[in-house]
Length: 409
Image (cartoon, rainbow, N blue to C red; front, top):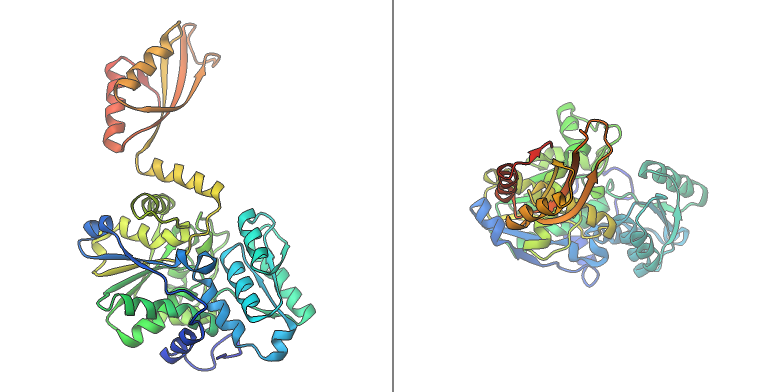
């Protein structure tokens, strides 16, 4: 199956997605659907998690890449394929190419996380590091395609890619036949568009909701304008949905078939990732956690049963550490305070004693005596604490004030 062009010569239909599903049999896993008691209580109706983070290569991207490369002619396969990606698409193209016996070259940004670079190589691709941002990497990959004749595999804006990603929607309908709302992360739009094509053809009453990061939300202005719009310098921790312009093919499908596009903040993304880890025991990358972030931010807006698509789990351990800290702070489980104390022997021990009584775990202490704003007998102490939530934070601050400490910030 292949449409052959970068834009569809005819509308993408359910049969295309079903054909992709047959092609992916034995290649892509039918990923698990896990219930979430916490989110079910919050939303007030059943919430299930579609675990594409457990897909081969750690994301849904293998589906579209395999369908796209399968559709190449013998001559195109002989020329090889090239792609540009910071992670998930890179790994999907690498594995799909290896399975199909096609040579692959993948351009990745110079700063791409080392685990993702290593995984892409392990799946069989030749990796070339180029550019500081994905746009520069994409330009290099397109130039390589022009120079060598290799086929450029776009990460989302091709009907074969969209049909492959749409197989997630078919699985959702099989695993949760009474689903009423599907919530899915939205970057370029391949996954959301594919799911919408499949689901709306079978169950048109099911709501499909796309979720973007506030700092990389190209779809809301594009939908208002009626055409793809570019946002300059998209900024978000969610690399998987950090796309500055919707695709031409995906935009038309999103506009026609997706019921709503929501945005979520960085705090909501990190809180959602933390919830997936703690409550569902699932490692999910920020883009994959975006549907959960939408549920957390406005739980009453979704009619159940709800399926939240966890699109990927490829998160760099260093980034994961930062995100978890951010998520704990957003959830009120970190507290940073600056206090003024009398600079005398035992003052710091007395302060720590007060914190011990209220069961606050001290992570770090900074003791400043040389600031010109301080009096001769004064010192500032900055403490970073691990707490049990917002109520515990309030208790800690109240105990410190009751002990006579001035909280400066």
